[in-house]
Amino acid sequence: MVELAGIGPAPFAAMLLADLGADVVRVDRPGGQPLGIDPALDVTNRNKRSVEVDLKAPGGAAVVLDLVAAADVLLEGFRPGVAERLGVGPEEALGRNPRLVYGRMTGWGQDGPLAGSAGHDIGYLATAGTLGLIGPAEGPPAIPANLLGDYAGGSLYLVSGVLAALLHVGRGGAGQVVDAAIVDGAAHLGAMLWGMLGAGAWRDARGGNLLDGGCPYYAVYATADGGWMAVGALEERFYAEFARLLPLPPEAPDRADVRRWPELRALIAERFARRDRDAWAAVFEGTDACVAPVLSLREAAVHPHLAARGTLVAPDGLTQPAPAPRFSRTPGALRRPPAAP
Image 1 (tube, rainbow, N blue to C red):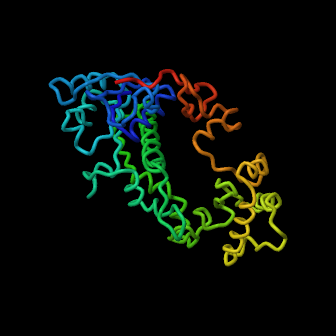
Image 2: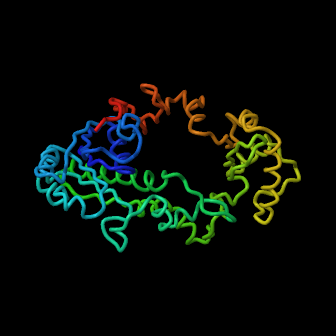
């Protein structure tokens, strides 16, 4: 697989495929990428090899097309038209290799009124209606780092498209272009909520629904030490266990009475405010109450469950997620550290 180096969702998609066994050759531009950290610590470039090519220099495009001729996949994350101007667009690449899967990662897509505009995760989420789902009703939308747009709506959709296209080639089909746009993926992630909206089961407003913090038994609560507990006791049997362990008094409002949700929320909040986060974590750990402490990244790295599964690993002292998902016959592996350009 050939990856034309960039930042954000395309490198993550290439990393995921590399984790699962792809031989990824990253084509770096002279001077490297402007991520601003030591390349040896850029986890998204693990399991890759690197070759430096100046695509703007005479013969640069020919070098890349020579690589493409022997590749199954090419990934690029340029703005629409840039790869074509550099001489490594779909026409040239598929001309050299008709079985090639040409994966394109953009924010706005290859066409449409905004296709040529700059953008970032936050703007794509905002336009797709996804950002407006997140956060309290009385406050601004909450920003989910760049996980929901770049990586969920972007990288994972690019990987899905590439794998489907590879399956098509493997069954005798021709190569093709996969146009993965973050705005498309971010909208697609909301499929269930669009259905609920159409059915009248979802209010088109933030913080007033079952899964967006509006429900008092699917919410986060502050603890006495300034920590937070996440409550997801949706089903009745899980809620019963939650109410027993908190505990809630017998006269607590009926959870099905939406009119009394504010009262129930205040009661739950008052209970959680009595003890520190770790004390509450000890109460709920291993139960069916569906309650968990909100951990920082460094705390997650030493959580017993994640440690037992090896969810996070630290090769050469650099903590990072292990390959996922897991396979019974062909497991992913960390074969190479992040490749220096």
